[in-house]
Image 1 (cartoon, rainbow, N blue to C red):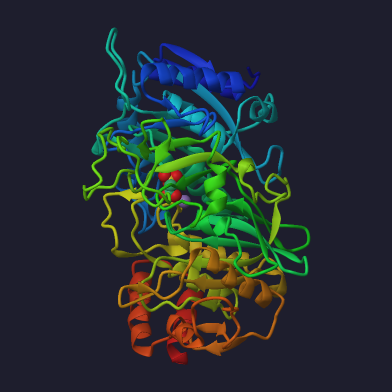
Image 2 (cartoon, rainbow, N blue to C red):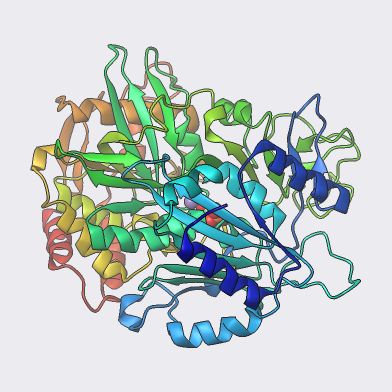
Length: 593
Ligand code: SAT
Ligand code: MN
């Protein structure tokens, strides 16, 4: 176990309150994992998939109310509401703790309390942090084991007097003596809580067992709490994938890219280039922690150890590397289950086998308007299994970042790619990302455009205005030419209901352009909104696309941009303290039309 007194005292304190029937310290071993999975299979809350088709893989179905993050029940509990800012739900820490203590009392009755020590980031890296999560959900344990470095190694790093981020989680479904458990214990939406306490760096979650609500290393720790640590300590915790890209000459660069949830980060992170001689390798698909190195460059690690990816539309066509990654040692939630215990989903690349059960456990009716796999159904799979995992994915120093991309789902206005004139302009671009809402969160209207600055709207642990300031300040910490170049991309532009850019593998063409721009190749020209590719700047050889089509997907329309800039201004107006640099940048763009 551990000799860490603080940890022992903390576990004991919570054991008294949560009142579990037993306590299990997770060592992260294969034996332990198998025991938990076997128990879930015998209790009916997991299905072991066909060993011949998906070795060592399991299937889970959640409750209807527990299929995604719930932003309306996610709170930043800072002493001063100003420190949560206009884009977060705020609640007073004192009041929230009082309220939650009531629901935590006895919450684990009849269940096992698992103690999970974990490292976010490569073991022993100076960029990594240790967390300890308590949970009564075996589902959460087997998922955290894939998503983080879980178990004894993390405990060893903690040692006798190391500090950790305390994370408390309960599904909120105590079992009375003799009461039978349900397949997916959880609470109704309005009784769920996902709370971050930025001042004391604590995470309290209750009532949900799914994804970012319950795997607390992910959004709660590696983004909401880590963004606060980053602000205090001078680094960045971002909702970004990290990829390595190598050109035909063998030169390699790393790129980080921020997109809102379910906008294709996983696809881009493991894209197979369609242009000859180029190679892309994956460091991470969701989160990047970035610090300046001694060389003055920004170095990134992926704090996670697995992928928690959107399943529907994943196929050998759309993302062969993801498809191959999830063929073994993978956990699937809310997809379809075929009669021979394999999984099926929309867009898998072949017809739904007769007799397949949908995510609600009903025989799937192919004529139904409802999908077989829930739209936010997920795979959870080890990063090391990815056929194109980057050799440096576990490197304690991380990888040096040459470029940062910002993007969202935008059917109109935003061109395929443009480049910031400098760092502050890039910060403005990041601050103004908008995206049409996806199904990654419950209670938001899918398709509506919302502001999602830096793709961090649901994940910034403090005042977004202060966060923008932090980005501006980071740009002053090193020489200008050592800072990553910043780009805005949009794969989703449409005309007459049709996508103007093929996306998926073809996005490698844009990555190649970014790569060449990082070598200052003369392939860009100025436009009012930033630098754009010269005609021929993007390689479209072999594509069913003409330079005329490229003009369409790159079109910058003055009238549309007036609209866009006034949306920007309205958005900035919600902030009481916005860095003056951002308004200056916005004015510069306005004036350049
Ligand atoms: O937050 S989750 O981990 O459930 C997925 C996401 O929104 O990116
Ligand atoms: Mn995400």
